[in-house]
Length: 147
Image (cartoon, rainbow, N blue to C red; front, side, top):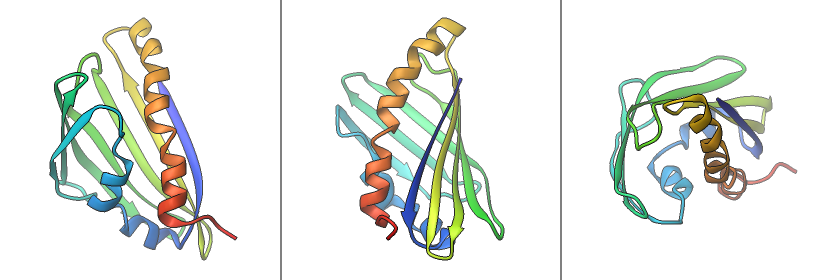
């Protein structure tokens, strides 16, 4: 299953991507439930992100940054789930910041996920959408809205 969300923000795409750091990660962390950031080493290939959900469920989520890059039109990195909370079985999240103009960027969260079967995967879609949709507002507040 694929979910793709796009958000237009202020800032050069390379500068916006350089700000995908722990501060932004903390700002993007869902406010419902309790969550601990066990490890966040960055957004470059080889980095790790380890979250521990404390409530309403107890589970660990570990993602590895498996790819990153930059060219004249975009910058990106990919996180892939290594340890996932039930019922997730597969997680591939491509974070892309595209150049719109010299001082405007488009952030794309391109997420592919799977559960143990097609029905569970379909039923997970609304929860993942609700979990990620607020990022649009957070991105605009964090980076600013274009004029």
